Length: 137
Image (cartoon, rainbow, N blue to C red; front, side, top):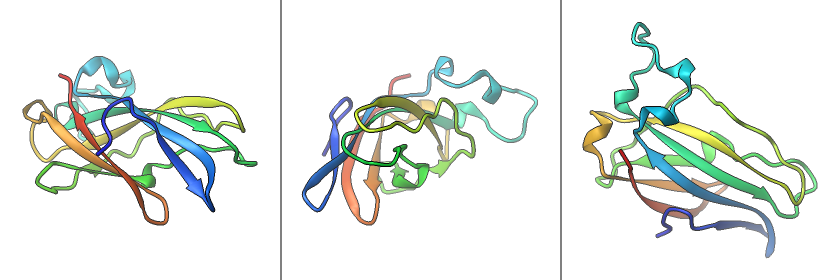
């Protein structure tokens, strides 16, 4: 299992292509963009969400790289899947040798303040790694 701040290398044909590292998993409202914190909105309730910050790097890809939300499947330790919020902020595709950060947002089935950990699978064509992550509140 991969923990917080541990880098995972994405390889193809034994060549390092990119890397991904999860640096923060939190329910703290300060980690949610102001656009998502709207008490009059029926779209999202951040008390039922987890914010995940990812650092990524393009090691040797000739095209720019950004990890797609579809690469990540989040679930509670009992294998109960988390939903994916349909918004993306702070995203930049990076060229070879460059790195950036992005946030992903997952919807929890109950109050996110009651969760202490989640797992996130990183997959492209097949599963590359499973992150076992503690949630900060």
